[in-house]
Length: 306
Ligand code: NAP
Ligand code: GLV
View 1: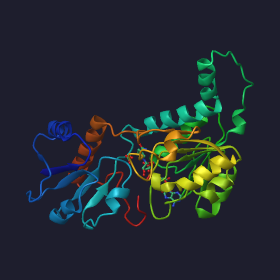
View 2: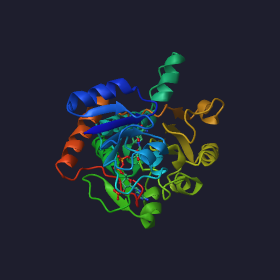
View 3: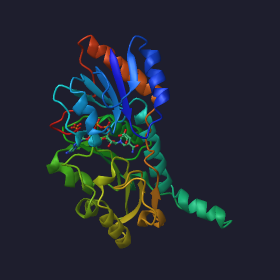
View 4: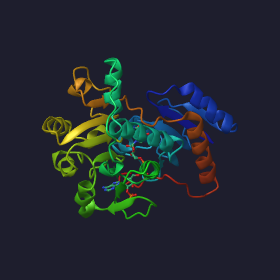
């Protein structure tokens, strides 16, 4: 079996070594133009040339959850696209969201300012009931985040394409229920995949439907957010603040207004990182299953775009 590895911005040697250790009989190498035909590819934002030159690939394994960069390419219909299915990401997303949510709701930024001012300033408690959390996307990551936030006794709702039933989470689905979902939300968490249907979904219309003084946590893709709409709604007071992990241009350019906005926290696309050993174990397990002719989880539906 031949496996080709083609991942930009990734230190390849530990991946090649880890894959080789797990599959000692396989021939595993870094992709180079003109290579012999491979059975499988392990990819992150590969060039079109990989698929043009390797049309026989049985599957390409994306070493991330989001496949928007891959779907911009022409990929042979016979090559299955498989994305990471959690592989240690959902717990990171749950940590990230709980941190941002609790920091906001418990006013930790104000206490940090008080510390710097040497001020002992107790505050009245705020009620969790006044901070209903709404999660856009109830897939592998969104469902875990929703369940974790519910354990902190915040009211939690979620929105997905197909109807869901998750204990402790009020579930909405479909375009017709989006406004009702938004109207019940104060802290909005975005965990949707980027598709033609979801691009620009965080815009003046949707963010204006939230409770006044809303808070946005965008951890999916930068192209979900219309950046100038967020800035205008922060100015008007409709949105109180935002924690943003993803941006239309990454790295976030120097001089971008998000860097210095007093009510925006920026993190560098780090909400849930790909964990190498968990990912290698998952990919190798799926390669072995495919070789046995068994179906695997995480196959991308090209028509849906995720
Ligand atoms: P997933 O399992 O595919 O879940 C996607 C969810 O979005 C599903 O619940 C799906 O509904 C819903 N959805 C998709 N299109 C929709 C639409 N048009 N209307 C309503 N709901 C829609 O994906 P995941 O593994 O949770 O990952 C989500 C995204 O997180 C990734 O695509 C990636 O962009 C992002 N991500 C970011 C980071 C980071 O570090 N910032 C790390 C990993 C992933 P159904 O359940 O009905 O299909
Ligand atoms: C990261 O953004 C991913 O999609 O895994």
